[in-house]
Length: 557
Image 1: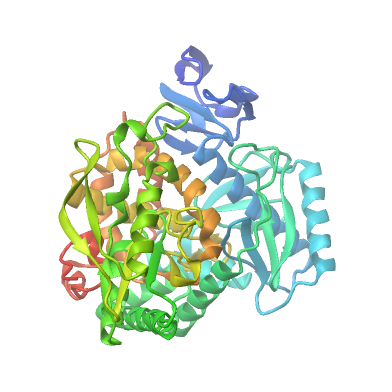
Image 2: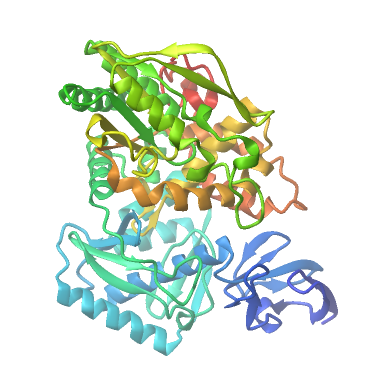
């Protein structure tokens, strides 16, 4: 067969390979991280910015970038493969039990057997079986089958959620993956073999275990063990809500929409969320004798602004008078802003805020005094005082939202007993199937993309490229303080992914193949293909007070 030219992005060289050669035949053993210089084993590749397994064969000239765990797609490939490894081990040891992955945890993935408690000795057995499979270095394989055969296979394996997804999409063929004698389904390529999955552990958690995987910063070490009980309770409550509605998977959600019941679902979800905001306001009201300040924090696109307004609305219903102080007006002057590791202004750092002034103002207000509020001019990079004054009456309560609102170092001089802290995030427990969870991060990225394009004129490409920096800021300044919240609030809605598909899909298709954001756009488009989109008439049923209107427009709060 003829030879073809392949451009290797990692080192910029042109390589001649036989037509039909697998990527693995000319892949390097490792790739070097450009920032740290650390080498990572090659797990997969981007071929013309599209993620491919290393068994992918090249028949044309391509641009190929080999990737390791230091690349987001490399980490997803590792995690999919690790999930399959856990599934296979569970099938080998406990063929009569049904293994499932419920949702993400701060330390990994929460796994359990359906309807059963996993004993510690069973967890030890699973760990050893996974290690045995890793030591055997068994290859992962995949092939296409008729969709009807895939449905029959998954139903035979008692995997109704997998069968439901295939059935709801109406495709002729479906790709299945195999590991030894176990067959399953995954939504993306896997590593070549089990021998690549040496770094993992199982930690007993709740009724099951946490499947731990490597840290982003160091693929040889596991994510630290973080027990976050409040977050777990929030996810458990949302999972119970999904069961109440009968929608625990994408297949069930698609079926509900195809039955023409989208508006019914929208109304039900909005009623549920309104009740949750009312319960949150009730908790604050119950503490009204001591609490004068409500702090609300959450990661990007979690709906902090809408949530603070909705909580304020419910507090008014109870007879309190909410007043808002915008923390964005308490930035320090630009030349005093700290720099990040790249030498750029780090506006998300705690030191970017004038904490002394904020503390003084809050203490003055709590003491019954009056303050003059600043207004920050972001173009000039300095605060101004324009005579806007504030003091608190008996029934007044401050409502403030910002990324540092749960950090005790934000206002250490203020009496902490006077503050009620709320953490808000879009924590979906909806699953693609039994062992494929929907990423809450992807959910927020789609929200931000739609809002940024509509409100700020920011292209979807820019949003995707900025997202890693946003995520690093969340990891430093938000997630470590989640458990400091007095209450945690879930802003996810069951109908939002079908809604976001309607808005995000056209934006993602504008990203050109030559863009560095193209690989991520392709991944998100592939994910959205599994979800039935809402129609314009159905979207009109979303009420103007909905948190979703913060992202798609038309909000009247």
